[in-house]
Amino acid sequence: MSTSDEEILRKQLKPNPTNEEVIDVIRTNYFNNGGDSSSGDVVDVDIKLIKELDSYDDRNLWISVNGKNYLAKVHNGVESRDMIRFLTKTGNDENRKDDDYRRSAIHLQNSIMKHLNVCNITTNQPQLPSDTISSSTTTASSSSSSIAGVAVATLSVVSSKDSPTPLVVRLLGWVDGRPMSSFPMLPIEGIADSGRFLGNLNYALSTLPNSDQLLASKRYHQWDGKNTADLKDFVKYVTDDRKRSMVESVIKAFQTNILDTIKTGETTFEKSIIHGDFNDANFLLNDNFQVSGVIDFGDSVESWTILDLSVAMAYSMMNSYGKRRRSLSAAAALLRGYNSVRKLTKDERRHLPLLIACRLSCSATLGAYSYAQNPGNEYLLLHAKPAWDALDLIWGTDSEHRAVVHTSINELFDLACSSTDDDVGKDDVIDCSDLCFPDPSIPDPIAAIRSGSTDNVSEKKRKL
Image 1 (tube, rainbow, N blue to C red):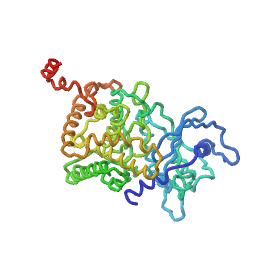
Image 2 (tube, rainbow, N blue to C red; image 1 turned 135 degrees about the vertical axis):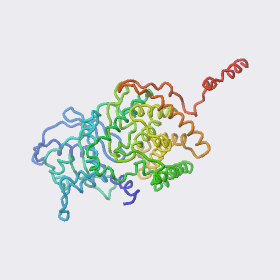
Image 3 (cartoon, rainbow, N blue to C red; image 1 turned 60 degrees about the vertical axis):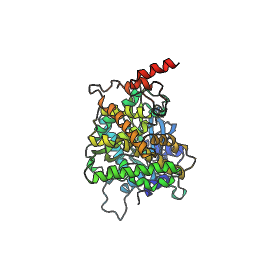
Image 4 (cartoon, one colour; image 1 turned 180 degrees about the vertical axis):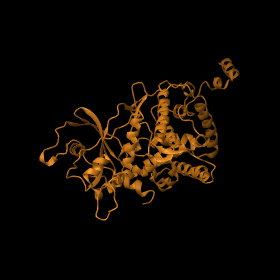
């Protein structure tokens, strides 16, 4: 399978069952106490749909079971097939072992969630299914599926020619809080707190036991920033010439300034398992704008640790604070919070602006591709305009102007890192008062005061 084929397949095999069908799978596989649903032995539980949640490639339902909240997750066909092939016994596969499911991406997600909860980082807790899988499931063995913490059901997908198809369904514990994306207004200190949380998350992930045995973490994933060069397969879906030239320029810079220098040993990045998609929809805030938990490890891979930060900074530029032409301020605040926990290496700091541009290019380009495959799905355009605006600000098409911009951005990022208070407590508010300023597109009527040119101000007063 080529680098672009898997991304295409994800769109074709996106789950498309009814909400009632998903709830029925949950009832049958997680609440039957070993009984046979066809004989009426399923436990009488009250399962209600609270809300269907947005997702790019999966199907997520917020449900309540006897008044307790859960997340019902139906995985897209790519990850589902990856797991199912290890669960399904076939006559030609005599070497298959009962724990082969540990090689799947879904098992990787379960392992991460369990470990983070042990580390006191709140995330979903995988729920174990009942021992007996109903007759509506595939040939996956009931014991293997139960041990793996998943159910398997045959459900419809977006592609009619592939429907129905076996898909993995998981029941996950609920994480309290509201996604940052749901807040119409944000204080900059809340963004800094999310950076601090991410620093702690990266540390916890670096202590994941037996991570070398989680082979799915080494899989290819188009959204993994170290695969930015492969965006060339999707650039054709960007129909605007100027936008397309920006992405092509980012890809070229990535190849020259990062990949080529890594090959020669001029650049080195620390590696670990990362979250991979720390955007404002994937972490939750409490009423004090502090991060209360993190969700969605579908993009988790072993990669450059710095990519978690660059992804988070890219999306901070598009949250409700950043998109009000405070994008650079938002990125700097998140960096300050992160750096208070995990100090950046010299190479990470040097390449941070380019890595942010890489994620913005990925989000905008794959968004254009996804929308081309599914026109009318407005969720796919959620980050489109803000992503293009942010990319235009920090990259653009004029190389000379870009150099000037990057000089200022690097000074800003240096300020964010050098002003970090090492003594700040884990729950203390991180002061970002020196980072509260608008993007260059906003006129600055007190520019003369900022530069110390008070004589110019006096001259203007005399003229008035």
